[in-house]
Length: 461
Image (cartoon, rainbow, N blue to C red; front, side):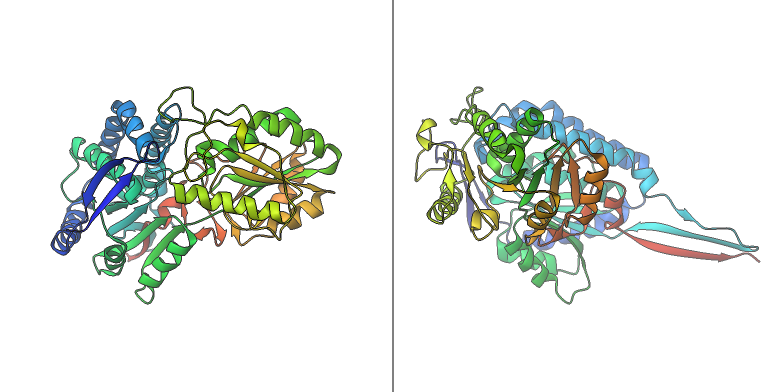
């Protein structure tokens, strides 16, 4: 049996080992999902709500145990990991609460002797592929609305956080959810592609890299199946001359370095009005130096390791290339004693004198580094913000709501923030443009891609 291991970034140990599902197990799971979904479709929305809430309550009851386990798997500081399960609760409850409205029939204007309506119906079995960086949050975005809409779900998690899939399975099992409605499989890349292609799967929801998203598109090509792809980001921020300096710095530092920058919507490039560029950079660097890099199991640690040494070295190479091309690093990495080349423990960095010829300003970093550029005004900032193959989120820091809206209309991004960044409001659709993906999760619109409309034309005799 082919196996996979979780190598903990905390200390390099093998934290867990699992075997991949074999062909018989995969076939059984697909068949069970289809059969279970037919029965699940006959349950009421109230019944589905009860099972989903039961799973959420189980997760919250075991929050601290699962949080420490998550820290071991991917390295986020233990002080922060419980927040992910709290976020799971917030998003899950919201999507449950809006299900009745989102799934309600669309009634049309009456005509004599006619009743016309559009009803949302489940697709069937949904395949959810979740990443390691926010393993619970990204998974629940699709799982809860899929189940509430009457679909069955098969979850495949990143090998780095495969225990999170098992914990979600525990939660739904504990809620009494009928067998087969929610299942997890540990799969190789090859077998994942096979599941996508299988006739039992009606829709695939993937969160991860652009490269893998393209491979998933290839797997589904010609099959007339739905896909939702949440991919990478190179999210920009623009700090206008009228921005509140202290508040902007505080939130942008967190938006850039939380989770060691390992977020698709992390702030990775900042454009600052020339009139207070130096003041902004000085305050920004001072705040970054407040981080404490170290063992993420220490409650005092505020910046943990990256998920792997390979990931850290890739970010270090981006920084080195930028410095060779003329960028200036603002932080002496020796300031952070736990920083060590050849390990996942990496000091945060701030770069100035950067430009868009540098990969650190063009390609996703997914690490604790941000480049800051001086701009003359709105037009230059807008052009630079849109100069990217990605388009997930963008933030504008200003006291002028009208300008923020005008700039937001021109920005090529799925979400535009004003005086906020790196946040998912479950009432808003989470969507990317360009290489940041397609489809959407959360909000009422998140239900649309997990259902199909069925029209009824009823002529009275």
